[in-house]
Image 1 (cartoon, one colour):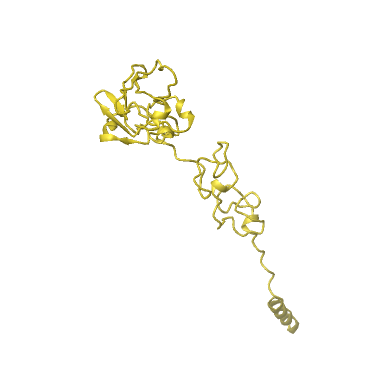
Image 2 (tube, one colour; image 1 turned 90 degrees about the horizontal axis):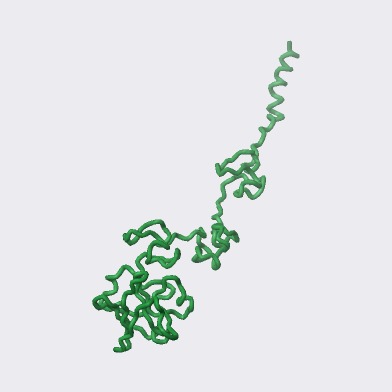
Length: 235
């Protein structure tokens, strides 16, 4: 009987002396075959938030690299990162996707019944920021003054003033200024008044647009544009 009691006592005490077997440790989150952060990627190296199989979290605490400085062409336009990517204003921009302009946003921003380029005649391209360009192509804008605000009465066609230094301003599809070297373009109806160095421009029937006929050197001296009756005077 004493032997039986001794054996039972030993069986109860021995585990306490030796200690219970250790519980199995759970594998790290980056090596447990579970998508712990629900991003569709499981464990290292598939989950970009895992730095190694021993990483205990699939959720990164580091801020993501901005698209404008990550070496990737995120919008598939052929350009990567700032300053080459037109959708990036700095290397810290989170996305390379630029907001659509008024001339490419699918909306009739000026309420004239025409939407975006090329349907809206105030749009000179999809990168044009306004459907109400009274000065025409922003790359070749008039640098003078809208005297008396009269030009604002015309929402269509657009006006453009002094031609910029870039020769492309002479050839844009909807440029309304023309450089004349000899003779006069048959598509343009224009008359120089000779008074005060100004120009009177009449509306041609073709295309329903106003045109200014003047050499570049004279255009660079223009300071003001205003309206008189059915003509527009620029001087």
